[in-house]
Image (cartoon, rainbow, N blue to C red; front, side, top):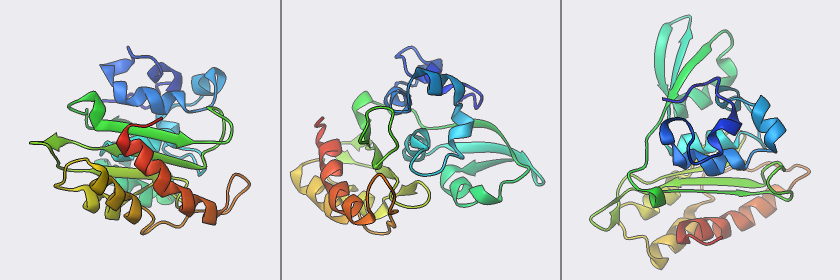
Length: 210
């Protein structure tokens, strides 16, 4: 369980709350210590593109958001929560829970920014790649700054499902990564540029390259 009022900075160290090591890289990619000490995990759920990097990681980790509103207390899948985010007026976020990867290498995260680590995101990618008997089972890939909200790259997930994480599977996922995206044009990068480079960065993420 993630404490929604916890400061982002508290997740930057390997001894972070709940030993959620998968949150270290997303937390460290957000601004500097001053920003991270003011920003909270719950608040990041409402950050607009090109921010909200921690939320991209939570989307890949299949988070569930516990809320209290006019319908009482509800547990909402993060995909559904984000789609209804702008209609959440008067709703309190109580808690966040998410999957804990079975192995450290099952979760991967990459943020592309012109100013690292403080800058806004050109693209943020997060992937959960559980391996069963040498094959991917239950792939989840999330993208930030490739649509108005963080989104799942479902075509890329399908390209990986049931396959070994080899060059052929990685290439298939990279070829499919742009499907369903609608990246913005802004001061950081054009929509054209984002579409051109997202596959390159997905390949590097999946191959474990820096």
